Image (cartoon, rainbow, N blue to C red; front, side, top):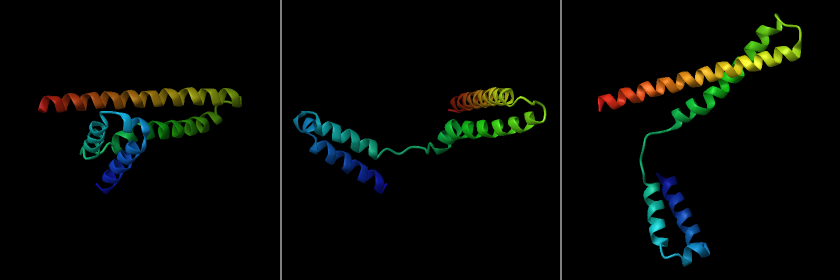
Length: 115
């Protein structure tokens, strides 16, 4: 909570110091909006951020390494092996993203029914 208060005062101080804000007739209203936003409470979005950004990236890298290793014993042409590994990794990552979206829709649909 302390960081939110510091953020609010930093934004308010910056707004006061800016010439445009000093000349604006809605300056107090803007400061009040930033204060309300700084005091807003809500659920943590860390799990959603990890699921949306970090997990697909990690899965892509792992799939690329696995496919490269698997195809190393099957294909001799390195350029072709790299291209096929890349294509399979992209397809696997897209499949993961579609699965995550489908699960998210089911969860949202389930939550809306229970309300």
